[in-house]
Image 1 (cartoon, rainbow over the protein chains, first blue to last red):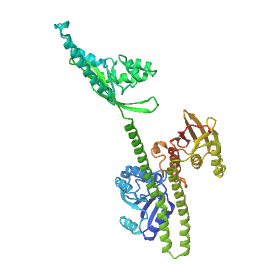
Image 2 (cartoon, each protein chain N blue to C red; image 1 turned 60 degrees about the vertical axis):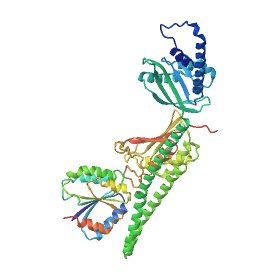
Image 3 (cartoon, each protein chain N blue to C red; image 1 turned 180 degrees about the horizontal axis):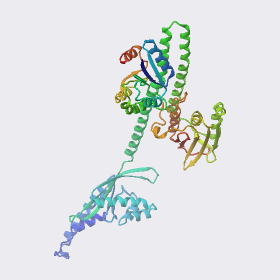
Image 4 (cartoon, rainbow over the protein chains, first blue to last red; image 1 turned 30 degrees about the vertical axis):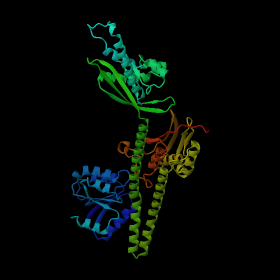
Length: 131
Length: 404
């Protein structure tokens, strides 16, 4: 089973994303985190347990306590210790080209997706996950 | 008459050693020569006196050898100053010696460096208008390399200075506006576009299902998104209005009345949490400020203190005013959750910044408060210890005016 971490404080968006994933017939385990700090502390706890680490992270930028950018900074430092190659997608409602540009400075970022994310894109991402 | 010129010229024409200075037989020629010299002196003097700049010439001890009417228009003063220094002149004109101190420092700078120096100098004229001069001073040496005099002159650059200041102010305003525009774009994409995306996705799902139960569930999810969109939109409009209300009217606002409005508005919350609100407006009880801003500032700070209360204790909020010189400091202290300032100092008042996991936190409140404070020339800052509480300080840049 594939595993996804959804880091987003917007319950509606999380609900909708869950629905999309459910509709593509791809059996997945989805873990939700409402801000960067919660996700980060969980990741650092399970860093050496390959079976618990996600295959894909969907990361929102605008969140309370620790936003997406702050998360990326900490995550980049943590990544070498994680025993799995995780694909990380920024999923933001931002349409600012500066933010897209800024995301390129993080090697941990696979791609920058602008909300709403097409079903087809999610299918593509999940297909790329090798189980 | 220009004494120093006379001195220089007479020096030059002084008979050399060995020559007989008492040859009275050449008297007629000498007179002719002196007449010519006087004419020449008058010619140069006229030029110096008519030049529209300030000119002053000093000896090597900073005593005046010459000033032109551009520098001192009053003939009596102009006569007085010859042979004197700035300290004597300041005493004569009942001016503070500090002016003379400054000029002495500049003189010594020119004398000791042996180079021309330049500086800008702003002083009030007799009518009290501030006049700025660009001043230059340079040492002049004789053929033996001895300092013979220091020439100083100044041009009135008040107009140019004013223009520069206006421009600097404009640049400041423009960059502030540009920053606001960037902020605005970020709110639009994060706070407005996000719920719009949700609405459009929910609608897609509603359209793609025939199951009425499913449709009902999806429609019920639309409501909070639309409410959120409304709230965000209203706050945005409010924040834009602050920018446009540049001419907003100040009034004397009684702090007790202002706080009472806030307490009335938040009464349910206050009762529920068992919050205590203490005030100390002994020093200052009235602030001259736009009433709607002051209401909004106090409401925001108090409601933040309630919203981010510590779960282990009842909220205690202490609001106090203090006079500091011409300024007034309003402080709002609480015993709430506090904020980690080491992590968040830089973007503390930034729009969209939220520090706690709270369902209704959007990161607009403090941004708005800061805008309302700064629009009226004030400052806001915070002190906080996580788990102990926060103190917000606001410095109002206005003097307390007595109702006139």
